Image (cartoon, rainbow, N blue to C red; front, top):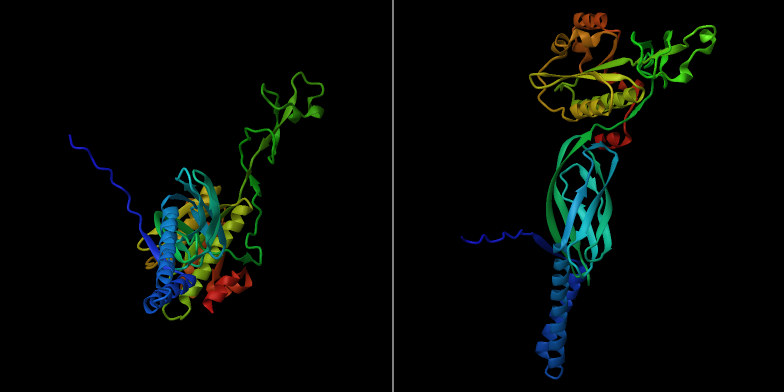
Length: 392
């Protein structure tokens, strides 16, 4: 049987001379020219010329050996907010048993719209592990594909920077940037009503439901001693869980070619919707959303929890052209069950073009309806300052 040859991984390294390196190289060439023109100190000058070139070669060999023996693993969260700093880290492992790696820098090979700072590792002994911290800021929303990491060093003499590109594909979901809600858009509290069934738990933030006889396993602290006086079996207070209020967002962000800043206004509507979702879920609301897309409607039923919050914000991050469904078609496709006892917030870039009959139908089926257009956001929403700087 033929032995299979081990396939070695090909690591791509690049070389970039520093300003000091170019000066050192120029000085070496001048020393070489001087050695050719002089006769008396010719041997000494050639020796000096050889030492200078040898020092540069040794510097490149040492630098390349350091970056080739480092394993890098990125620790990056899956989601981030637009215009906010995301902190993450790199785990570096020196695979050499002896010999340390010094002066290491790490940087993302990031696409447009992502600004990141470098991570540093000053000294990494052989066989050790180090975590280098870094951070990045995403200026645009959506799904960003990170290609890899650039590991570099200029040790020992700083004459040249040896870079190694490490392929580590990763996807980062950037949510629309958060702003500040100026007014209270949520008209009701999140614990207005209660369920008609008793809670299994006897404690916490539950509401009073009624009295019943004591059963085995009940918490003795919930015994109603005043009502239990003169009875053979104690009386226990029974509690019920409060039912959170429901918020349903209807999002219409179709582009209007007649306005020059429609693209920026649509992004502002998305940032407002993301801020409302984060604010409502922080107050205990069950939040749902209906979003128009390309030939289909994306509907997320009102729920609570971290998973629902991520699904809603991911849907806002994935909004892209073309959007073919109108707001009237969106209202017709809504399930009537989700509109019961729900506060409906309609966010539209073309409020004036909505059919009044559809709005009346939506208002009658829901608990409360409020409509906000792009021109009305200034009264209720304060946008992120970095978004204004980008628009200017």
